[in-house]
Length: 253
Image (tube, rainbow, N blue to C red; front, side, top):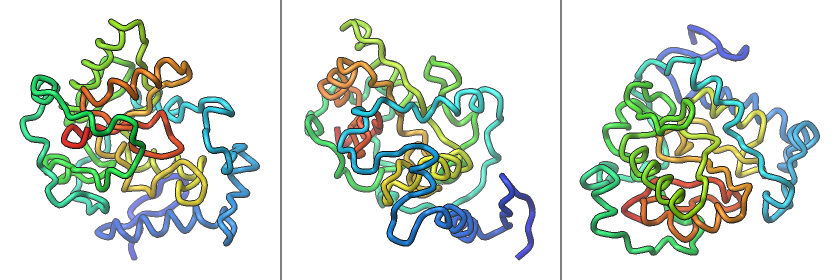
């Protein structure tokens, strides 16, 4: 295997992204005991893996550490990159844009539902780049800091922000699109979700498609508003244990 570079001391290779993922996960898993107790993360980051509601111990805005990076670091070059967990009919958001689904109304089937939405329907326009490899210019600013999303998701989120403001709610986010390397960094700091942490396997996070946000739900009124209204803008509460994580799934909202 020919090494062509490294990030944080870990080599990556040309032409074999799957091996890169395995190699990086191997480093991550070295810090986790065989029984799945994330001793490294728990001691260093005080993750309470038994808490049913992470808000009980204080809201942790994952995206805070990425804000400077989003503004200062150019997006990674586009590259064809395989992904897992992508729906087969990945281009079917219909007519893109916030108004296309708000005008006809959504069913509201996601209200009261947390998780269980299945693979993310990822448009083919994003799949050609790969998860976490989307060029900066292919994403749209959402009007808050350096945060960006896939254009229809960005339009929808900004419409939600305006609607929330009309109801006296300040709807802010702490994270949006994450590059592949930011996903790796998050797992190294917060652990894998499947092992009690908060990070998806790098290369599979829906943040890496520009289709997810982490909202600041420190104020319970904000979370209540999202759970009542987010479906109108195509967003669903997709991940158990993470009430801040909302995904753009207009066909499922």
